[in-house]
Structure formats: structure tokens, C-alpha cells
Length: 265
Image (cartoon, rainbow, N blue to C red; front, side):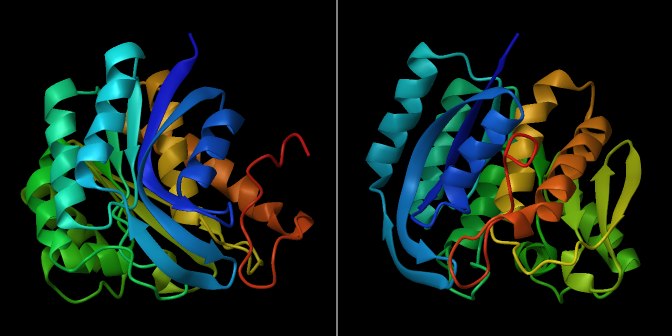
């Protein structure tokens, strides 16, 4: 059976992140992709110049239209822009109760432009954490959700992962890319235990959309795997290969995207 994956996220006009990256990832991993737009961005490889949020009632209308007609095996949540959209999405998830929900806690673009209003952080913490099967914060995002300092080592990453579980998350993938060093370590923290994942960093500056791509891969692959540890391993393998092939693309003059279709072209 071909998995059906729904992305609820913002649009990247440059094509490297957001729903564009999600749909490319779904296709590359043999999942049928659907989308609910939460915001439009004026964006390229050099940064975000403008953001236009979609009205919350229209976000809800898109979500309800998909669920009314099409089987949804997994949902990926990305850029949600503001608290009103967070509540609209949370209400929709409560109405439709999808089996697998991956929450990518997108807050700031790689160039530093805010993609989430400050008051929306508490809405994500209170409404979406309990509804998500897995959340995938990087270190600054985890600190923002917890209201604490950014983790500076792997021990603190694990501690914050457990704190997010205590805050209502069902499972947490703490992404350690901000730690630096030769390896990029991630920690999966669940009520059943901890799993460490680490790969040698790929020598490329073209990393635009890595967080979107990883979370989309998790949503696309989860229906085909027995549990989160196996799903995370497969998704990280895909992202590593996409990063390794990123320099084969020639997109823009800034931080380019990963190569989602590295296995084909």
C-alpha cells in the first residue's frame, strides 16, 4: 500500500524548504503527498523577505477537505506562523485524529527571520505537544519550548528531551546540529528509552530545508516501519544522502537546498 502523507506548513517560493521540500521528500520516499498551506513566504536561498499568513478559517477548510475525502496515514506539521493558526490546526487534529503526527517546531528561518510569532510558542506547547506522535526540535527550539538555556552538550540534550516528554510530548527527537564538531548527533527520547544517532557532518553549505526534509521523511516512512527508532534511522539515512548530493545542484547564490531526488537525477 502506498502511504498518504499530509504536510501542514508554509510555502517556500525558492523551493528548498516548507511544503515544497515536504512534497519532494514524500515523492522521493514513495508516499502520496497532500498539503495544507499555513503561510506564504517571499523567500530564496539568501533569506526570507516577507511572510503572509493564511487566515485560520481557510487553514481549517483545507484540512477538513483533505480528511473528508482522502485517507491520511501520517501528518507533518511545519511552519504555523501564529497562535490562531496553531489553534486551528490543533482543533482539526482533534476532529480527525490521524494515527501519526510529526511536529517540526519551526520558529526561525536559517537566515534569522522569525517564522513563528512569540505568543504562538505557548500555544504549540499547550495544544500541539500532546497531539504529536513525535516532535523534532533543534536545540534553540527545545530551549524556547521549555523556557530554559540552550543545551550545550549531549547530556543536556537528553535532559531536555525528557523534560519535553514531561511537558506532554509522546516522543522527542532532539536534533544536535547546533553542537558543532565532526559528528551531528541526535537523540530519540521516548517513554521506552533513549536512542543515539550520529553521522559525520557533510562538508556542504547547502543545508536549506534540512529540518523540513527530515520531519517530512519521518512522516512518509513511519507507516512502513514498526516503531520510531527504525523510522528515525531510515529518515536520517535519506537526509544524509540528500546532503551528500547537495553540491550537484546549482540553485541560487546563498544557502542552497539539499538534493531530494539524488537517487534519480
